[in-house]
Each structure stands twice: as structure tokens, then as C-alpha cells.
Length: 437
Image: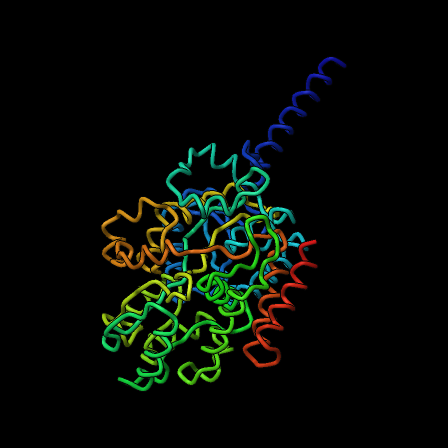
């Protein structure tokens, strides 16, 4: 009887264990690929749908939304939600730092400026991508190597480049007979063309105290032969060449052919003024071409030309820019995040961004894609290529944000007339040396 009771108890125990296992619905996959409680949904197949949040700055072209929609359609088990961050890259940076310092998992994939990868990796905000890249055999040789290397730190890949940028000069072909080759020529034409064919300004650019001002300052400084840091990372900003470059920037910012509130202009204000027919010239990034030729949004569609930025005494110089995408180290859906990141920065996502958003791809085979070239004929334009070839990097430093802020503040004070250019340069020299000790 005791044996019978023991066997009966054992049988009941086995049945109960099997029932519990069936109810748990356990999976053999990595937990990082599963959605958290309250964030799961069922698709038509009955499988759990992972919900991701992708954060990036404002995209006035609408291309990003199309990428998200395209990805969602082709990935039944993953749903990406787009979250818009501040358009100002400095505010965007600070918002990410605040969020990630708190180890928040509220975003999964996010865009980062080309100058942030080392900082974010060192702070432990981003997930190294090497194992994903190797597992999926992503061919990194097909990417712009400069952009790719900008996301490498301590021998690891911390982000994937989405597109490359360089400052360019866009102009109204119905106003401009000869493209200015120097800043002095631009000044002469901007004065002459202001007020012609409905324009209010001759030239617009980004002069607000933010990262865009640093890009413009780098261009002026380099075009006159100056540097901020040399190849060894030493501070060499206090030179006659740098002073001459910043003086030209200050002169233009205070001229009567730019908006009176030019110190409030970021890319958004600049691009708006140009596509609304208010300016003959604009300094902006490659996406300006697609936006300016969009017949639904632009009043100057079909009338836009592109050229390298004007030269100073030394050369034409364009700030090297671009944006990348990374995975939040604290994301609860790392594998799903990689699937989206791979799509976003791969040929599919970059093709949509190139066609709809006018961004120059970091995935280089797209420069031979007929649809991309049809949408962006200036990608094969000799002047566009010259503009990219003129690209110079912003100061390379592990504490770049601190370096950038020093430059922003001093150049802004010089534009406002609070200090002379010479004093602004001396102040930057002192503060940069202290910051880089």
C-alpha cells in the first residue's frame, strides 16, 4: 500500500510539473530579445511582438518616419516607435546623458552625432556591436571608413554610421551668375543680391550658440589656414590665421545681408528661410538639396545649385559631420534593437534616407544606385564631390562637449561684440589648455 501511495504521489508530481512548464511558455532564446511586461503584443502568428523606441532629432524631411514604417511592415514581430528629440544637437546630447546616467531603458536605439561615440562608450551608455556584426556577417568594407572609424573606441565598434555630412554652399541659380569662390566674393554678391526676386537676405547660416556654430567656426578657421588642435592634440588656436578666419565669421554675422536675428539660426531656421525664397545663398548640409527641390515644400524647387564653401586665404574647408545610430546598453530588447539598427544603417534604411531625406549615404554602394542618383543628382556632381573632399574634422578629444562649449561661448561673445576676436582667441587658448590637461 505504501508503494502504491508513493507511485501515485510521484505521478501527480510529474503531472503538476508538466502543467506548470506548459503555463510558463518558456523560451530558449536570450532574455534581451524579449519585450518587457506591459510592452508585449501579439501579432497574427500568435508570437510576442517586441516594441522598440527609436530616438532622434527632428527630421523635417519625413524620411525617418518612412524608414520606421518600412521596417515595421517587413518585421512582423518588432514594432518601432519614433521619438523626436530636440533639434539642437547640444540639447539632444544632454537629454541622452540625463536619461542614460539614470540607466533608463525607455529608449532602445538612438542617433548620436559623429563626435559622441567615444564619450558615450567610455561612459557605458552604448552597447558594443562587434558580436552582432560578426554573427550577421555585415560587410564593413562597404561603409565610409572615416565615418566607421569615428565610432570605434578601445578596439570596438560602438555605433554604425547612418550618413555623412560636410558643409556646402547652396545658391539660387536664377539669381547667381557666377558661384563665389572666396568669402570676399560671397560678401560682394550677397550684398548685391539681397532684395532681388523677393529675397530678404543675401546669405543665411547657423550662428546660434550651439554645435552648428562650432562647425561654421571650424570652416572659417581652416579656410584661412588655422587650427584649433593639431594632430598631437595640442592647442594651437592662437594664431594669425585663426584670428583672420574668426574675424571673417564675425564680419558676416554682423553684416546687413544676413537676418538681424542670425544668432538664433540653427539648420531649421536656415533651411526654412532658403526654401521660402528669402535668401540667395545658404551654408548647410547635403540634405538641403532634396528639401530645396521638393516641389511640395519649397518655393525655389528646380532653381538650386550646389558648390564647395568659399575659400579663405588658404583653401575651401567644410566641417565633417554626420550622424550614427547606437543601442542603449540598458535596453531590454538588445537583439531586436540590433535588427532595427542593422536595417536603419544598412542599404535599405540608408536608401530611403538618401532618396527622401537627401542625406549622403555612409553605405558607399548607394552612390551607384540609379534611384538614389535620380533623387540626388548632385551625388555625382563634381562640385559636391569637391565639397566632401574639402572636409575637415572638428577637434578630436575625449571631452569634446567641453571643448565645443568653450568654442561656442567665445565665438558667440565675439559676434555680440562683447570681446574682440583677439581676446576671444586668447580666452579659448587658455580654457582649452585647462580642459585638455
